[in-house]
Image (cartoon, rainbow, N blue to C red):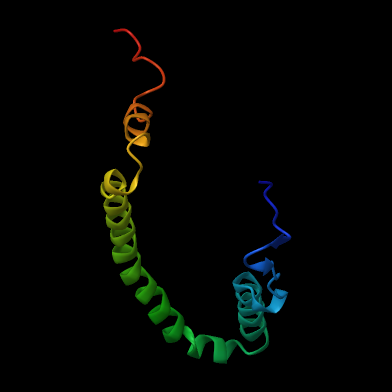
Length: 106
């Protein structure tokens, strides 16, 4: 079976997301608008400082739990692999985790 990104019999053709629906587009727009506000209306930009400080503080509070939950989910998915993998793949998966190169002498 050949891998085809253009079309699949079950799901149909792959639709490309429009450029204005992408996150990176809106991040660039926000950066440009922030620079324009700071340049054209510096007093308004200074008045918006508490909003930016609050946003950065909220992001700092969220980073720790997101990293923790990502690690826990990764460990949990590795623990379930022994139940979900077919029996023939278990010896291969345990032996492939061994180091490829021996430890250096000394």
